[in-house]
Amino acid sequence: MFKSKYLERVFTECLRKNAGEIEFIQAVREFFEAIDLIVDADPEIERLGIIERMVEPERLISFRVPWVDDAGFVRVNRGYRVQFNSAIGPYKGGTRFDVSVNQSIIKFLAFEQTFKNALTGLPLGGGKGGADFDPVNKSEGEIMRFCQSYMAELYRHLGANIDIPAGDLGVGAREVGFLFGYYRKLTNEFTGTFTGKGLSYGGSMLRPEATGYGLCYFAAEMLSNLKGEDLKGKRIIISGSGNVGSNAAVKAKKLGATIVGMSDISGMIASDKGLDVDFVKKLKNERKMLSEYSLLNDCDFSADYRDLWKVQADIAFPCATQNEINLEDARNIVKSGVTMVCEGANMPCTEEAIDYFRARKILFAPGKAANAGGVSTSGLEMSQNSQHLRWSEVEVDAKLKEIMKGIYHNCYRTSVRVGQPGDLVIGANIAGFIRVYEAMKAQGII
Ligand code: NDP
Ligand code: 2IT
Image (cartoon, rainbow, N blue to C red; front, side, top):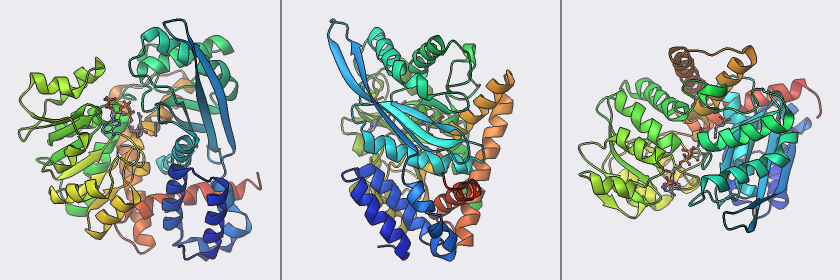
């Protein structure tokens, strides 16, 4: 499967050790396919066991999270924190609460985070956490008690220079507040050990918007560099309308695009004339569904969120969850006229879908590059916290824009250097790999 015998051997071992961890193996395979182009050229990589070490988390914490529901019954969930790689900085990455969460999903997210964080140019290692807790239909009291129980175990593994969590799917400002509050109580210290905090207690301007905004800055730079175009007049479809999706919609509209379709679990909404994205954001902030949008506005609605991929458009931003776009969806996307796909979510396209886009010369940006604006701004929040300073929105936005442009050009330059110009999957993986490899090599066998 791989040209490199070394990679082939490590992959076989990885399959054996991580049997059944579908998402983790998928993320590793994509990474290996890219670095296959360069690994054999440097025998030090094999001699130092760099790849074996890169696919083995430095530490994996799994723990019981008991909590009491509103009816007085005790419920038990499983919590995780995967501290994957700290070669270039303290572990950094989000926290996901979703029924689907398992060890494989948190490991794939932490693995990808390592290389994403390397691409930002900031001193951030890779980690991720979460729990198989379903926040849907839970009262605020239940959410708070769950967060406190989760933190009662996890706090001992965190620290401003050790491991700094943030939000992710199912974990927004409210949950970060509960998690950070309990961390602060348990440790009796106020440090920047969480990002995505509220503005009143150490959060950064623009952190909530940063992943979606960063995605638009990345897409704009990519369009300009590869096609001499910008987002003005482009029709965009966006899956998911949570933190990433709704903020990408707002920024893309500001940059002159028309958002012609969006989705959530309740279905998809579409309009040729463009959706009212501010209203979508308002509805989602009130924890309402897009099905409600369709009752109040003139638009098409389908209860099947996959129908989003049949809406005529120029660009697709998948911003919901892993493997949301399969081969059939990819076919629909290309049939609908889309010529560029930028991943706002982590690994939203299956391997078959990416191969299909590649074969049809669809411009494609992988999540570990395109959605790095969130963690980059988390890095900026850490800098502000450690200096006890607050930067203005203009300052943070300018830094975010620069970082996203830098990530794009690093990925593009790398793709050219390895003879695959414009293949950003290859560019992102190799550029991220090189930074982590150099740091690991310099620090000895640990
Ligand atoms: P949120 O929980 O804020 O939003 C997720 C959205 O996706 C919700 O609107 C949800 O619907 C919808 N959704 C979930 N599954 C599906 C599906 N199969 N089809 C259509 N819609 C679906 O999460 P985030 O926006 O924070 O995260 C989204 C993705 O972006 C994840 O992959 C995450 O890992 C990634 N990401 C997040 C970052 C961040 O800073 N938050 C940074 C980088 C990446 P409903 O509203 O009905 O629940
Ligand atoms: O996937 C991601 O990059 C995030 N959820 C954001 C992580 C962070 O630490 O801000």
